[in-house]
Image 1 (cartoon, rainbow, N blue to C red):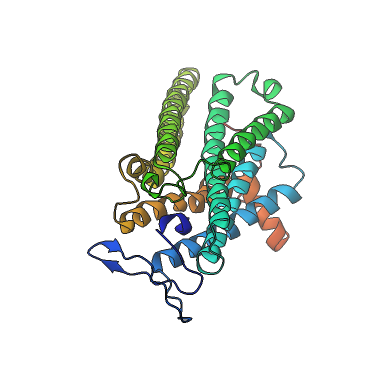
Image 2: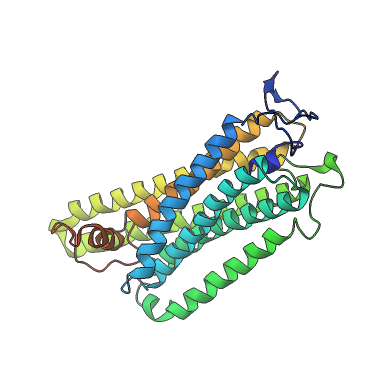
Length: 327
């Protein structure tokens, strides 16, 4: 994404520095000069490498474990694939910035990152909806939420995200008028604002769904407590722990993305670039945290990982089948 965060670039030399809180324009020289790499770009590339490694492991586990074919794991796999593309996009963007800097490459890089991060957010929304339905329609969930239906949802998500990704190439860019550029060149200010508003609406929907999940969980706990008086304390403790976990998940998602979304609404290419980097970097951390929240915390994936690495898994792991309602 650093490609879109710079005003111009040069094939012969790239010099980046901060003066008065702003990035100075790259200086072109007639002689070949050493390339001075922006530390923010290095941080984004390193983040992309970590993202790629984490999510490649998740995809490999799900792909090579036949028992992980439930709708929940299909959505987790789709999320991991989106984050993997985002990580690769950050790495490629770093390479393109300092080695192959052309307008067409800039558009391709921007489109890849838009598609990947959009797919990541939409897959998180799909997982949230899946968790909600598994509680709201607990009796009919397993008959309604078939694997085929989940694949259809995943395909629709990716069709939307691919469409968003090709828009910069099809002309929705600011290359013809630099004054219309957003904080992420070559995306226009209007398009960036539209994406930011869409994200905020998605976040509001997720927050509402998580509130409903908490209400349903507390209601179930009360019903169980009435039937089993002696188990009331344990159920209340378990429910409180689950609600706390949901709060942490939603809070991390908000901390990662809301600063960048809000900044995209008010800022443009004239604002100091350091502010853009400060908001973009936490947004990429969402793809670092997603595998931990949605994959590595899952006991079934943990067991598959232990089997792949050690050929066994600790006896302390629960053998209870997991469902989408498990936090």
